[in-house]
Image 1 (tube, one colour):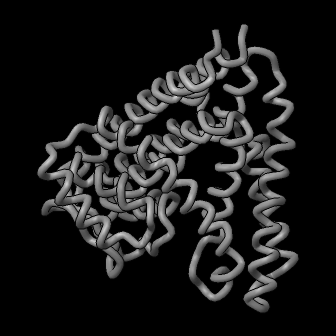
Image 2 (cartoon, rainbow, N blue to C red):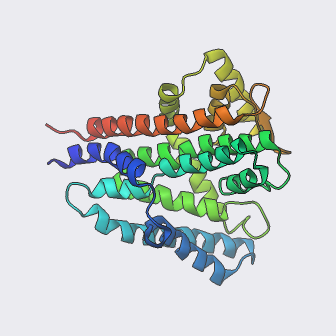
Length: 303
């Protein structure tokens, strides 16, 4: 079978593997190994030191993470017929994202606020201890729509643009950003390269994200534009504002991170909105896989 046809089929096949099997166990997950390698680098260097040295070693840490992930994924890529699908499977996460949101929803349905706070803590970096039910549901929905870009749309896009090595590069950079891309004293310089590369790769993927969200989560233009403008002004990330703002407009709910941002219509998300969020994530996965497969075919087809 021609490489261009196998590549186009890799996207829907990877989604099917993800929906049926979920993520591999951490012990065998290539992205987890990538994260461990970068964690070792960070532990040995133990920032902060000087800004220049932290910047250089932080960049080297991203390179090490990419190298480890590429070395682990290369044997998968080399498997005939299904290699690219296997690489894309371990670099995306639709089912895992849905399961995280579902855990928050189930806890809220039971009236277990502490359980919901604990569950949403696996999705967000903020302190969840004092959050009420509305802000817990908001955090879960915000994170779900933000991760539609990070865990679903952007990996598919970078597979189209760069093949298996493109999606591996994106996943390594995104993992490094999740680990070190913070503005605290320890990571402000050490994590800067990871954060800026992640911003760049996500911004490049935004047009594809707009098409996916437009098909998977249609919203009235008036509400959408107003909410997106609010999100653009409020959310500090140069890319997350778009899927988060789209999610708030789609649900017709207000997303809020206390003391950081607040945008969208009045009223925090409720349990039923988390149900719709789970469905939206799956739809975005399906649309992303189909569109990415089609684009791959168009860009690489040769008679």
